[in-house]
Image 1 (cartoon, rainbow, N blue to C red):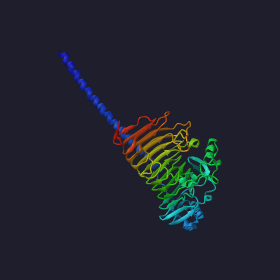
Image 2 (spheres, rainbow, N blue to C red):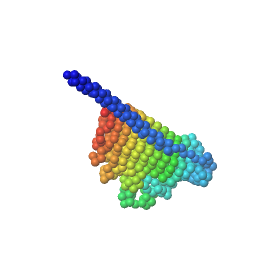
Image 3 (spheres, one colour):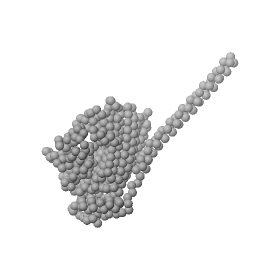
Image 4 (cartoon, rainbow, N blue to C red):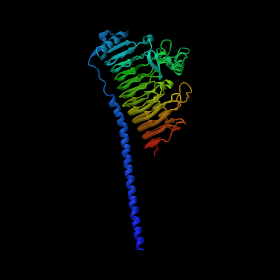
Length: 484
């Protein structure tokens, strides 16, 4: 009997010790898990800081070349092509510096930047780009909707240059409107008249699509005169160390700021106020180490759209856009706040978005990913945090792998979308959907995480197809908790 009591006592003690041990291990595991989670979070956002640090500061020689000294006339009527080109040439020959545009209105054709030159617009200055289309010829190596071509020169253009900038407090006015450039998009609301030439005509986009399918070299894809493909506003092609700072863009023919195959790019304190067709604010494409900060976007298309080529041309170039930080920006009108696609065939990775506001009855989505099986491509490692959304029309987060504006676009290139993270997001009016996700059955969307997200007043909280279970942490849509 005594042995029985001793054994029972020993069992109880051992049981209690095991319980204490299990509780200790569990607490320790949770502690380690929390520490790992915090460490992972710090590591993720320290990556964004490291990208910004790597871009660094772009500096220029301390020399000034005023376009007025080269014959520029600030009457808004006289053509100043020669004054701009002479001032830029003199600055370049001197080893670089600042080409200054003083207060006044200056009409000009396209401006070509060279290495080590900062085109600086003083307060009160406005550059008006001529509506004479012949001024943008001969055709240069540029692009259209993610396809490389020879076409009308961008209004501001640089190819293969290093250390270039457009800065200051002045205005860049593309003078595109319903009487100039915009009608070529083919839409009545932008001035197109029935029967007039437009971009969808056989000799324009269909011909370009066929050239790409046939593997036609870029230098033989000649458009420009006799064609209706609009020029970009500012394009840097194959450039390194680019600064766009402080200036205002308005009345753009097409995409506004387009770093193409460029690296170490900073867009800081810029205002884009342009509501024409395809008037995206900033479109990094095939580009890496890009910092977009302190900007205001009020656009006719996506505010920021990260791209990497369209269909076969994107797969030919095969340069992903990566290591991109967007912060402290304000988005108003536009098809999307921060967007990836639709020209995305080479893929996008490592995108960081923080401390932005998005609010307009004419802002369709906050965060958007768009592709299809002709585009293919991938989107991975997207981190979004500390975003205030007042109002969107369609969705807070939209992922669409069936995107198409030229009819059905089905092919053999199944897109891959993974590791998309939203944290600390507040939305007052969520539009038609809180989340709208349409993946593919062959390859569902994976790794969607929402933490500390509150979406109010969404007509339909969720429409999710072909997506692995979403990780909800402290997330509420229309006062309903969606949590683990």
